[in-house]
Length: 435
Image (cartoon, rainbow, N blue to C red; front, side, top):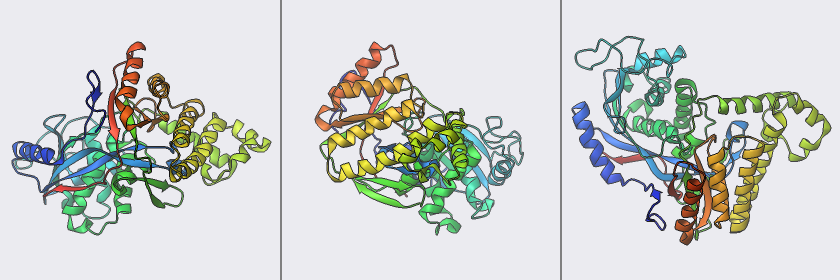
């Protein structure tokens, strides 16, 4: 890929599936004492436009990254679950699927003490104790198992799971959804009682895994694109009616440059949930099912302004959601017309709205966007939940090195940690890569 060889810049290239498969096979043999049944992957994502609209029944336009999370999985028939990570080393959690389900029902999954339960059983190295619930990244994996017990018995879902995450963590590129979806597609292939699950059912299970079990609020866009992406296409997601429309990438001379600012965000710190609560309160005050039912003209009505004035931060939050939905519609038209300048202008307008009205940007994101635009990018914006993470810029393919260099220089001049870069191209959805 043009632009990934510049001296002094940190570029993150996608992993090669065959190399990861070989490495995971060896690692699983060493860690668990046996080879996996196969290796599955799920991609991270970039959202071109349509931010913080999914939980408002609105429109978004993401696509799958070539950067993926891999899961080497071997099915067990004793109800035991062991979870490990190449990056973390060793087994991150071990227990019983029934234990995970019970703790999840009590609302404690993801909130307990780290580590596996004490008093290991002789064969499995686990216990039936309820005290050792998975926390941190293992909770996302365990949450998938808990969610799928709604479909099959807990004893059917035992597994040894080894994760290799190649989506940058905390970068706003949906590493958590890639994690949960990689495990979910593996279980669908391996467990007879799950093989008839539709993609929509699998997505719903992954959403529950994050929202209900891992305690990380998500609107569903990330899981949807990870499972239902199409190569060389974006995916228009209407979270109101659930429709999905593949949209071809029509700007072949341009690339989406991703800037990982390394200002790592966490959607579990309350800010995401606060924005969501404000939107729900505003919709209730206005008597609509969701903010996406509002037309922009109504935001100028005195009655609407008065109602939203009683909701803290209501007016600017609603203004972002309503205007962002319209920007998605306008950007679709611009893509159809191959109007690069208009696509870029809409991306930049989205960033301004996210910064000013939704207040989810930060200094690092603003520096990245400003530097990319100053260097000639057609458009730029933050992507993902915000409060850190990544920015994206629409850049001519021949200019990737130069624009990335300008962003890097701006970070150095501002005294910020040096960013990392990757090139995003619409890639394939979650699925099996070996076995």
